[in-house]
Length: 63
Image (cartoon, rainbow, N blue to C red; front, side):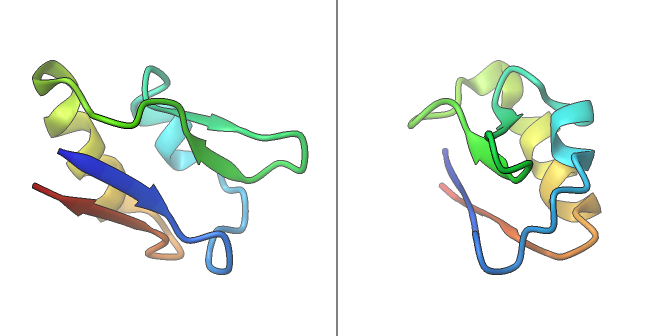
């Protein structure tokens, strides 16, 4: 599974970081960034949840 954060949509709410800090973090500007290029199977459910709960719908998953 791969995940991306749309920089134009992200507003830095940090919901994804709270749900899955192993995959998401906030950069120096306060916006979400993806820490892993490939998401391990054990984090896939949390990443999907983070995408579903993102207030700005900035997270996209594939695979």
